Image (cartoon, rainbow, N blue to C red; front, top):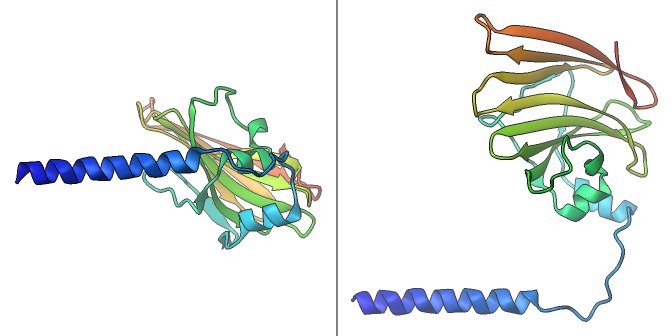
Length: 191
């Protein structure tokens, strides 16, 4: 009986290796340079949930609703390398498009989260022009689970973001509130 299971496991492993090798062979199509096109961004944002305002974003490890995980090409299309707090790509574990907001007809707003290492998670609100050039961005939520010593959540309205940073090292925790204004051109400035 054990031999039958071993043969079955061996056959499954062999079949999956063979399948993986088949997909890893180079294609006959020429490589093309990644460019931002309206069709690629339309596909990227297809069916992306849109949340209504006002809202509180308290995205954390226990409460994270990902719409979809972004590929490296999609991250490049969205210019996310400009917002990462580190250039060490090995530390960025997963990047997800969470939802969109309708703040203005003049720009698009996306909320994106990424896991930094195994213990930190950042959530950013990013405003884009029609060609997906970043106009403004802000870290609106943060969670870390190594010491659970700090966190960030934000209250979002049409033109104002109140960021609440919590320091849990103190008893009681110290909460610092900072207000940011979303300008008509999509930039975000501290009030």
